[in-house]
Amino acid sequence: MRTRWRRIIRPVCPADGSLARNREFRLLWLSFTMSVAADQIFPVTVTIAALNAGGDASTVGAIFTGRWIALIVFALIGGLWADRLPRRTVMIASLAFQCCVVAVGLCGSAPAWLLAFLVFLVGTAEAFHRPAYQACLSSVLTPAQRSAGAALGAVSWRLGAIAGPGIGAYVVTVWSPRIGFLAVLTAYVLGLVLLLPLREPAVTPAPRTSAVREIADGLSEVSRRPWVAGGIVAVALQQMLTVAPALVLLPLVSRDVFGGDAVYGTALAVLSVGGLAGGVISMRWKPALPGLAAVVGIALYGAVPLALIWPVSPGFVYACYVVAGLGLEIFAVQWVVNLQREIPPDRLARVTSVDWLASSIMTPLGLSLTGPVTEAIGRSPLLVASMIAGFAVPLATLSLRGMPRFHSDLGRFGGDRAREAAPASLRAR
Image (cartoon, rainbow, N blue to C red):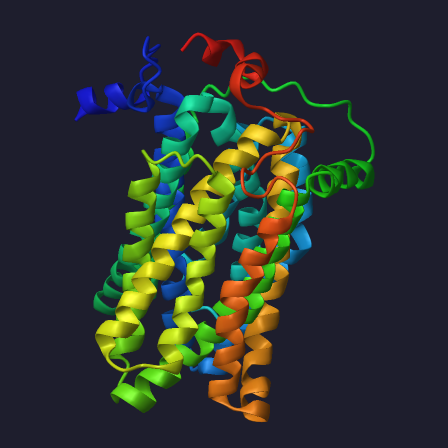
């Protein structure tokens, strides 16, 4: 066991630049995997704790609204500080804060308002951790390693989405919510410990100005590249117009058409299975037109409302969800890799936070509007409109300059220039 641990954390300077020999990536990836595990178990633990305290569905919904509020309020600020400070420092501080927050749950039965506050605080730390992780990931990988590195991160996320809720539900129901909080705390602590020996390559920050100016600089990096702005807008709109309605209406279709909740749960699971397959494919696939591959991939999510309009069988519904998950992950990997290539390293976290903020605003808006719109026009017309938007909105962005190749002439970090911009510790690999 001790030998295996040393293999994980010991410095390695590979001659061939292989991802498996990149010590800093191994530490970062394992830490991220632990964080994902905690993020997946935490909602299940909080949900069951709230229900045990006498809450209902409305209580649970109100509690998790706190996460969205935290992301919306702190996303840009998190990206700002991830560019101002060493990303390793930001991630360690975020995980340490999450450990302190989750430890409160170990004290025993908590009222709904306290659970909501805990969710808000964990979401706040998440708003700092994720931009820092994406920016640090770029700094520890060579350009040749970025596709595989981003894909492995996607695989970790999907595995967590598949296994995390089930593990969390088992732990909490067999033992208690307190044990669930202990499992979350353990995962966060492991993620923090794995970051301690990480040696992040130095990134020279831009001269510090006011916070407003630096956030504006991040927004400027987006606006100067039509394909980046178009991609962010397309994803945000698809979250509101396609993903959110499908999340709300899938359980209703499952009960009304198939007579139970089995199709609901299985469809969400196979969505993650499709995403896992997309991540594995993306580890080696380097399309000649990455933007085209990514846009077609995310447009495949239009198959989900199609399955809900025409639920001829559970198998057809599952197939559509697998295709959607596959496309989502292909988009995600190509998007992350090409942002790392195109955006200056000292502004990458801010651009990532802009992307995240747009989706964080539009998703709860879509969730809240789905019910009233369904009552006003009916389920089928809404799903038809959702399907059209799912296909059309991403494909429309292909007309934007640079979109098919995910390429722009401004601030490009690719090829030889990427190697020049990389830290000296990576250029030798």
